[in-house]
Image 1 (tube, rainbow, N blue to C red):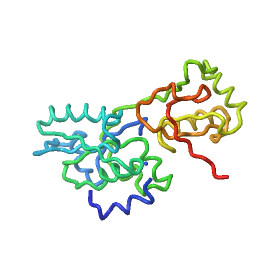
Image 2 (cartoon, helix red, strand yellow):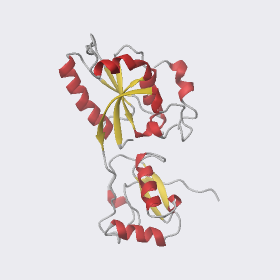
Image 3 (tube, rainbow, N blue to C red):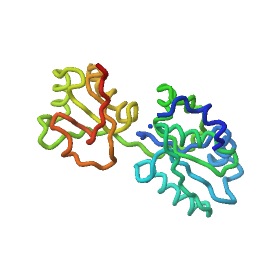
Amino acid sequence: MDTRNRGRHARGLSRRGVAMLLALGLAGLPLAGAMAGAETPWRPDGPVTLIVPWSAGGGTDATARLIARRLTSDLGVPVPVVNRTGGSGVIGHAAIADAAPDGRTIGIATLEIGTMHAMGLTDLDHTAYTPIGLYNADPAALFVRADSAHGTAADLLDALDAAPDRALKASGSTQGGVYHLALAGMLRAAGLPVARVAWCRPRAPRPAFRNWPPAAWTSPWPRCPRRRR
């Protein structure tokens, strides 16, 4: 990534996806055509870097490494996975978009590429990429503690309908991230305001659910923003 272009993509960097797309930077369009079945097949003569905008050990990283192993076998060249993290996904997505159009860099674009610019984090959007293929989709799920009074999704929605704003907390991704959007979609579909639930940024990837109070739901160890008085 040319660091001279970083400011063009990032406006006030601060800190995953349901859909994951194997993508090239826009300048890699001829390569995408070759991969899609043009007369000249894609046969790189050296390593091909696969950029992942999220940290090692996560779901995006795990699926990317499966693809990298298959590409290594099919192409006969190394396909190392490089995790370019930071800026709520901006750093890694910018690295994919800015890569030289030589067929030696591909990347994983996640759902956040459709939201980062709307949040004011970057000018990047989907038009900066040439898609190769959609390879993964994950449904969002609701979790509550075993001793919670909410035994079904309907029970939880009833409780949310009766609760004041921010009385219940939820987590699962960064503010404005994929699971926050899933929650917002559920609330809107139920006719409830998005502000009804306090969204909390998780502090650790694998904390214990027992650390949440019974009234909380989804992922544990929240770091909720506090309103200034």
